[in-house]
Structure formats: C-alpha cells, structure tokens
Length: 232
Length: 261
Image 1 (cartoon, rainbow over the protein chains, first blue to last red):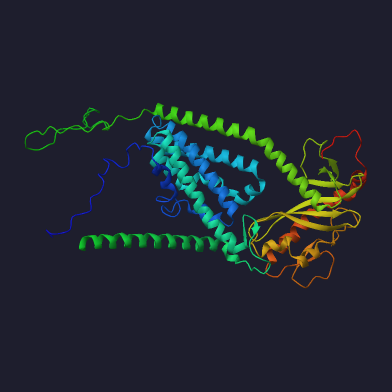
Image 2: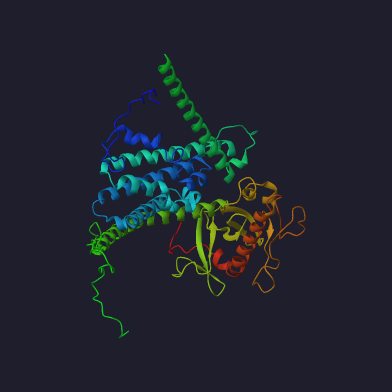
C-alpha cells in the first residue's frame, strides 16, 4: 500500500474540539438551522416534534417557546459558567431551564388561551427537552455570552422550522387548511390520519428520507468529482 | 475485641510482609484535583434557586391579572354565544343549601359550581348557562349547556374543552343530527324538586324514544356517552337550584347593585 493516493488535505484540527472558545461567525448561527439541525440531524426533542405538530400554529408556538427557553437558559448558564461547580452543574442547569419554562408557560397562557389549551402539557415538558440541556452542557457552559445567544437562536429557529415543516404538511393533508385558512374546496376529503399521532411518524419519516437522499446524492457527487480529478 | 493487636488508625499502608526489600509504595490519599468545597456548591445552588424564584414570581405577578381577565372574557363570550339574545351575564353560586346566591356577594365562590344567567338589554332572563364535565375517549370533555327554565330543558350545547379524536369525537359540536338531540333535551325535575325526573342518558344510534335520551353518533359512541354524562351532571347539579331560586334569577338586577358585565 505504498502507492495509495494522498489524502485530501484538510484544515488543521483544533487542539480540543470540545473545549475551544468559539469565535463568533455566521456558522455559529447557521449550524442550528441546517448542518446540526436539532430535529433532522441530531434527532433530539422527538417528543414535541411528534406530539404537537398537528397544526402549523401549534408548531410555531412550540418552536418559539423552545427558542425562548434556549436563549434564556443559555444566557444564564453562560454568565454563571465560572461559578457553577461541575459536581452540581446538571442540577443547576435543570433549575435554570425549569425557571424559563415556567416563565414561558405563564407567557403563553397570557398571550392565547387557545394556544395554551392546544399545547397543553407539552409546554411544561420543554424542561426535559434534550436540545436545551444539550446546549447548556455542550455549548453555553463553555462559551461567552454572545456566541451562546447566537447559537441558541440558530438552534431554536432550526427547531421551529423543523416543527413547522412537519406541522404545515400535517395540517394541509389532514385538515385541508394552513394556519387555519382553507386551501381546498368543499370537495376536499381530509386525510385524517395525518393529524392523528401516526401522521407525525409518517411525515417525520418522509422528511428524514428526503434529507438522507439529498445528503447521499451530494456525497456521491463529491466522490465522482474526486474520481474524475484522480483519473483526469 | 480486647485480644486484637491495636493498630494505629492512620497506618493504612503497612509494610508488605514476607521477605524481600521494603518497597516504598506511594500512599494513595486525597484526590488528584482539589475538591470543590461543599459550601461553594450550596452557595451556587442557593443563588440559582433565588434567581429562579425571583424570575418565576415576577412572571407570575405580571401575567396573573392578564390571564384572569382573558379567562373572564372567554367565559363571558361562551355564555353570551350559547344564550342568543343575552347581552349581559350574572354569575351565581350553588350554595350548600341547594340554593343560588349571586357570586359577587358570596366570598367563598365556586363552592358548588357556577351558574351563569344571561339577560337581554331590558333585563329579562334569557336562559342559563351551566357546565358539565365527563370522561370521553381521550380525556375529559367539558361542555356548556343552555338551560331554559320555563321549558325545563337543555336547548343548546357547546364543547368548551375536549381532546377527542379529530374526525370522530369532535363531531359532538358539528354533527347536525346529533345536535338535534340537544335542542330539546328534557331535564324536568322530580316531584320533590331535588333531582331530574329522568336522568339524561345516551342510547345507541337510532334507538332514541324519550325526550331525555341522546342518540349517539355512530363511530363516536364513547364521546357521545360523555356528552350525555356531562349533560346529566350539569342538569342534576344546577337544575334543582335554578328552579328553587327562579324568582331571584328573574328579578331585574337592582340599580345600585354591582355590575359585572
């Protein structure tokens, strides 16, 4: 194996990818939207993803509530990161997250009784959403305030977009409406299963299939180009 | 115990017995990194708990009046929608004695449940809104009913809260044939005036023979049954008190009395 082709040169890896201080770039924000999307790439927070996406408005409400909790808890964890002893960090993070969830619970109740009723217990369940504890542990506890806020906003919006892409498809197919506006005529027969729990699994599966296919196609293209370069 | 050779408590690393040169083993004591003192942990947790407490209390103080106002408006809208012709409502509490008292004069409100009376612009009683709750297929179904005291019947219904299956159980509010049942649902009292003469029941689709029966929706029997139970509960609870204190309900409100519209 002496004549194996040389490996493509890659950027020098940072010394410790888990502990470096991140400089604020556009990637800090965009990662959550696409490359590390919490739902479609990391497959985190599946409970609200499947449970409350039966309409677009529920998806938006849930996504924005989660974004708020991400921002608030991230900010506090980042500010207190030098004072929280590592033995009690998980307990501290959970208390901080629970605080912001309670605040958002009151806020949604005050904003719309209807949305509050339809989201139900899933607002309180944001406490145990892995995305938030994951961000606190893996990012906010090591980074400065500003990157934490930007990254949290990206993750939150990525989560919201993912919920919305499920919620809008399910509402259109299962109810014939989008954000409450009828899209089809009287003759439309709603595909009811889509707003029922199984519909969540079907639509999530379809989206994951689409993203996996896109990723595979891109990788094949890169391989083909590399092959052309090697032989040409 | 007295026979044991006393060993100094600190001598945890005695020399190995047997032949051979003495090996000076490093003593394994203490952590490699300095331990965080418990006090620091307690202070941090205490501080975080305090910040949380402050935030939660502030959020509650700020939103509580808004939430209460929104809920009051939502109840009022529901009452006025179910009693067409009514423009103002008054709340009454069912007391322990089985009678009604205006909610604004009773400090311990809600003890036996609320009854909402709707009046038109001239102060005439248009009907009463009563609520009932029963377990359906997927959770509790909360329904508001319009009760006509002159006809002694439930004349309208509106589901306030339900998690019933879309397409089946949510027909409780939309199925025209089913709603016909609730346009003249008999809720007469027995001779003593203490309970309904005939409890309201849901029967299998197409077998309704009496005015106090509800014809179930095919495919949503459990939800229909919940509707029947909720209607029965609401009427059993409120109708005797309403009939007893009909005079109080019918009298136009006193001009100096508190207004709660």
